[in-house]
Image 1: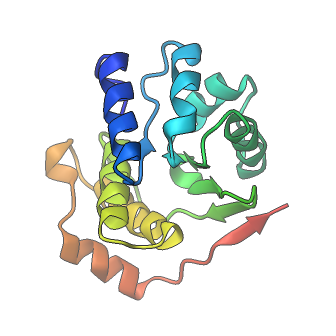
Image 2: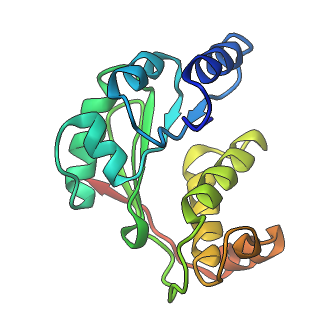
Length: 180
């Protein structure tokens, strides 16, 4: 879910999904009212803000993977089970259930247009999780999809096909690093 729908609709959908035992993923965009997002956090398995959204929710600047980990832990302490921060070319940072922070670097590409990269990441993450992939594998899948999308112009035309994502995943060494 995202916050482009009325908050009551999002809250009801996320609560229903949680009641049914589904994995809940919330992209808190746009963050217009931090208090309303805070109300949703206990229902969220994976919160996926970008660095600006995370900064608004945590009340601190997010300038690096390390500061993203600190801010993500602040937001996590308010109820989200896991926080996955997207950092554009710097990759993403996952703070998992145990509070451990993982930096997942971005795939190296030459960007042409970043339109829809965040939506591509979120949709691809949801697909991978729905297929039963573990979260770190799902993040790699989403990162590969977003990397491909920024090499093309436009929104829908930039979205990759599954075989393109799988080709990038098969040929890439993509280590995850722990953040202290």
